[in-house]
Amino acid sequence: MGNRYLPIGIQDFEDLRRRGFIYVDKTAFIDKVVREGKPYFLSRPRRFGKSLLLSTMEYFFLGKKELFDGLYISKTEKEWTQYPVIKISFGADNYPDLNCLKSQMNSILSEYEGKYNIEVSDERFAPRLKNLIRLTSEKTGKQVVILIDEYDKPILDALYTEYEEQNRQELRSFYSPLKDCDKYIRFLFITGITKVSHINIFSGLNQLNDISLNEAFSSICGISESELTEYFMPEIEALAKRQEMTVEETKKKLAEMYDGYHFTHDVEGVYNPFCLLKCLSEKDFGSYWFESGTPSFLVKTLKNQPLILEHLVNGRQAKEDHFKNYDPDSKNMLPVVYQSGYLTIKGFEKEERLFTLDFPNREVEEGFLSILLDKFVTVPYDDLGLEITNLRKALRAHNIDKALSIIKSAIADLPTIVKKDMCENYYESVVHLMFRLTGMRVVSELQSVAGRSDVVAATKDAVFIFELKMDRGQDFESVADAALNQIDENGYADRFAVNGKTMFKIGMVFSSEGKGLVGWKTR
Image (cartoon, rainbow, N blue to C red; front, side, top):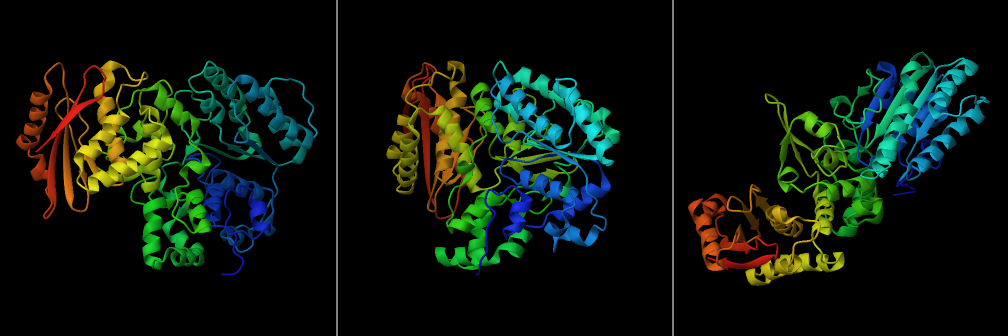
C-alpha cells in the first residue's frame, strides 16, 4: 500500500499537505463560497473537520499557492491574492467563567496587534477588534479575511452556571464590530456546533448566510460515500483483510457504523471523519465516539431538562426551526441533540416540510443511549455494560426471568434527580434504553407507561412484547393481567408477528411510589 498517512486529528492544512497526509479535496466548496458570497455561518457536530476547513481557507487567502497543487481550486484560481487573515478560535481552551474568556480574547487580539504593529488606545475588546480590522486593512491596502472557529464554545462551557449570561454578553459585544467594519472585510466565515437563536450574538449581521442545511454544502465537512471509495480504497482493502471480510462486506459495515449523516434531505450520506479514520487506521470496527469526548453542554442539558425519550428515538418528525436553532431557555432538547451529531436528517415530507430525525449510525446510537443510561441508572458504568451483555444473552436464550431480573436490579429505586411525578417516563425510558443497547430491533410507541405504551424487542427467532403499567395502589396480579389483556385486545402480537418466530407477551408492573419494578407476568 506504500506510505499512506491518515490525517487523524490534524487541523492545520499546511502541516497536512507538507507532511504528505491524505487530503479529501474540499477546495471546490471553498471556491464556491469565496466567489459567491462574503459572510457565512456553518454548524456541524464536533470532530467533523470544521477547523481543518477554516485552516484550508486561511492558507488560500494567504496566497499559499504551492499547498494547493493538484487540488480543484488550483485549476480555478488565477490571481492568488494575499490577504491579511485574522483567525479567532475558541477551541483551544475552556471557558467556565468570564475571566477565562477575557484572557483568551486578549491573547487573540494581542497576537494580531503585534503582527500588524497596531497601537491599542482603548482596552475594551470590541473597540480593539474594530481598530484591528480597520487599521490592518489600511496598513496592508487589502480587505481583511476573518475566520471564527467554535464561536459558541465560551457559552456552552458556562451553560447553566452564573457565568453563562456574562460570557454571552461579552461575546455579543466582542462580535458587534463585524457589521460596522463590513467595508474592510473581504470574507467572513463562522463555525460552531450550535446555531444559537436566543442569545442572538450576531444580531447586527442580518445578511449572514447560514449554509448549515444547504444542499450545495451538505458534504463541505466529513467524508461522503463517493469520497470514501475515491480516497481510501487501499485502507478499506487492508481493513477487509484484517477482519476476514470481502471489500463489499467491509464497506457495508463501515456505513452501518460511521455513515448516515445528512445535513439536508435527499443527499449523499456523510461519514464522521474522526471515527472513520480511526477505524481505517486501527483496522477494527471500534466505537471511537467517546475518544473525542462527549460535548459537555449536551450532558449539562440532559441533567437540567426532563427526559422525553419520545422526542429523541424511533424517528422524530420536526419542522426545520424546531431543530435548527438552539434556545438555552427552552425545554426543547431537539436542537442540542441534533447539533451535537446524535441525530441527523433521515427523511423529508415536502408538502408539510416535515423532517424525520434519527440516529445516523449504530456507533452514535450506542454512544447517546449510554449517556442517557449513565444519567438515569445508578449502576456503575462497567457493571452496566456487563449487564447489557447478560440481558442480550438472556433474551436470546428466551430466559425472560433472567432478563427482567437484570432490569429490576438496574432500577431498584427512583434516582434522586427524578421527581416522583416523572417516574412513569423514567421507567419507560430506562427499559427502552436497556433493550436498545442490546443491539436488537426495538420498537416503542412511547406515549405513556400507564397503559398506552408497549416495547417490542426481536431476536432472530423470537419476538418479545412488553406492556408496562404502574400499580397505582392496585394489587400486582390485577395490574399484570390488565397489561397482558391489553396486548391481546390491541392486537400488538398481530402487528409484530413474524412467521416462524416464537411470541412472548410480558406484563411489567412498576411502583407508583418510585420503588422500581414490582414484578412481571408472561403469557
